[in-house]
Image (cartoon, rainbow, N blue to C red; front, top):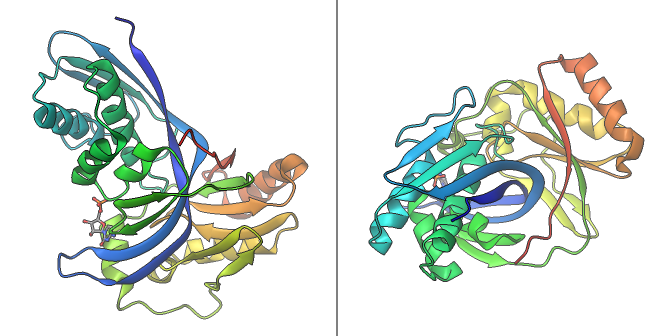
Length: 282
Ligand code: C5P
């Protein structure tokens, strides 16, 4: 049988609102997420026994990798032996708030369902995804969506139009549990820009900026800088960071100009990538 080749897209949160802390330690959310055209790539093939390969520096290849855990969860739930080889190529930085690990896990669930012809519905795969992480069900649905609960309750919504985005990530990441853990006690920085930004297509706002900017002042400065640039319609941190994204008015020449400006102002070790929102297959 031919190996399956799957593209696992990143996401950004256009809106992330925290409703409160729950008794189980998670935070109740309403977040609007859209997949974007930056990808990890995954190959899955049938073989004797299990193997996992990823050569990206800093990415674990043991059971702590969500893609490996996805194989375990799928095979245990469906009662099949993990006779598969999974190879992963990273295009999405990790610790970035772009959902790379969650997208890999969802791609593995969807891929194994095809490979083993197990016929699971998206609802079932989404439930299995919820066992792996709050953002995994979103990627199973392969669509823009409003996600509630701890993020695992996915309502696919049509996202009309396509946004051109510039993703900007500094060399450090932000640990997600830390960002949520600081949310309740955090304060707004003077000069920080947290206000919701209104557009014809919706609103940009992220409640996790408050705790994250308090510690990572660089990100608050980066957002302010982006908002001052011509051609930038809006800017927001994605998820728990550390990626900041700018919504571009006219992608054309502004991408090269912004990249140059960012590297000049903040250093050349920033990861800068232009992409578009995806409508998804769903
Ligand atoms: O579900 P996931 O493993 O991605 O979450 C990582 C951590 O982020 C959780 O252990 C929790 O500390 C925090 N979190 C939260 N509320 C959410 C999602 C995540 O507090 N809705």
